Length: 111
Image 1: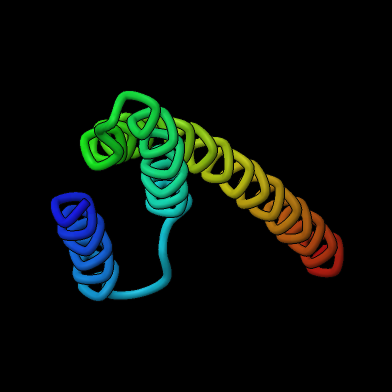
Image 2: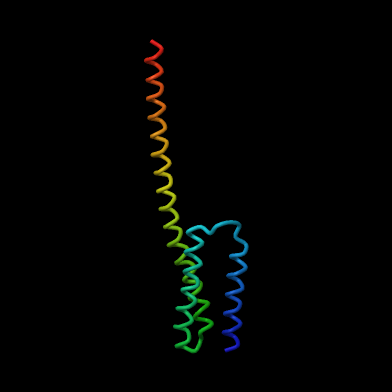
C-alpha cells in the first residue's frame, strides 16, 4: 500500500511540475495528453487493483492514456489549424476582391 501511495504522489508531482513549466495556454494536444494520462491512470489503477497491483496498473494506464490522449489531441489540433487557415484564406479573398473593386473604381475615374 505504501508503494502505491508513493507512486501516486510521484505521478501527481510529475504532472504538476510538467504543467508548471508550460509557458502559456495549453494546446489541444497538451490537454488531450493530460486528460488521457489522468483517465488512463485511474482506469489502470482500477484494473491493477483487481490483480493486487494498483500502482503498476496506474503507471501503465497513465502511459497508455498519455500516448492515446496526445494522438487524439494532435488530430484535433490539426483540424483546428485547418479551420483557422481556411478562415484566413477566405478573409484574404474578401480583401483581394475589395482591392480589385477599388482599383477598377479608381481606373474609371481617371478616364
